[in-house]
Image (cartoon, rainbow, N blue to C red; front, top):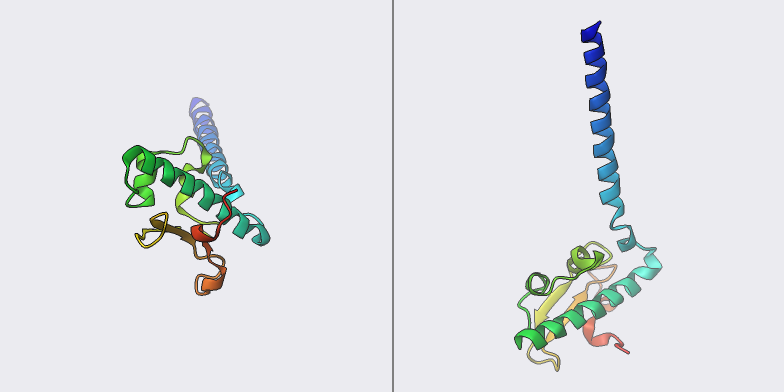
Length: 133
């Protein structure tokens, strides 16, 4: 009888472990739910992200007196202290934001999302076209 009880205990323990793992997977998957808005709001989300990233780039510039070489460097030097930190490299469509230093521009850089259609430059969301008011 003891071995039957031990097997039941092992099965219950295994089931509890599997349920815990499933809950963790579901919890982590829902953490970025805000990053997948309805298609109509995705350009607005990208514009909001770009404004936020631009403010962090300017903070980096004030701190170091140079522009960051990449968004990865920006995040390493000035980590965001909120849930957005992981999201700052990807646009609402799951593609990397493009950041490049461009000395011909007044601000010295260009930051953009390639928008819903990466092959159509007319729907790009760019830092030089944003209203920062």
